[in-house]
Figure 1 (cartoon, helix red, strand yellow):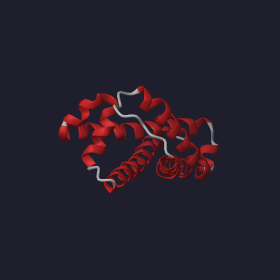
Figure 2 (figure 1 turned 90 degrees about the horizontal axis):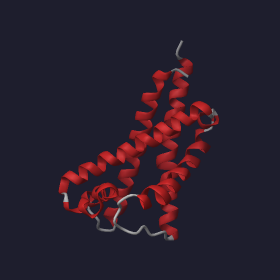
Figure 3 (figure 1 turned 120 degrees about the vertical axis):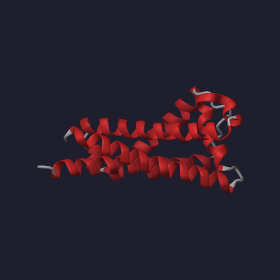
Length: 158
């Protein structure tokens, strides 16, 4: 594969996965009465702690920036891994959801606990199930399909 396809794969995968994920978070939280700005400030809370909730639209914007930075990072990790492990782009319908599980585990059991996020994360069976589903099919799968798309495009180029 040519290097020129890395950026489109990472941008496409990160944008789609990040958009699906933040839309899910805002809609799901909204159903429980939590406003969108609060959801975005929660993301910034991983960096700023409780101060994120006092920052208004500024910390919400920071949360959105951080959210997409993380999504692009995961897409880049998958893309880099797919260069060494062709299975990842040969079977994106399997690799993507498995990658989503990895993302879930790393985010919930390493990143969030090590961050400044000010609240305790709860692990009810419902929360775990829905978050695993989201990470598998709305995050991991789009990232894998974007890498596959880039792989297919590279093979067509003369």
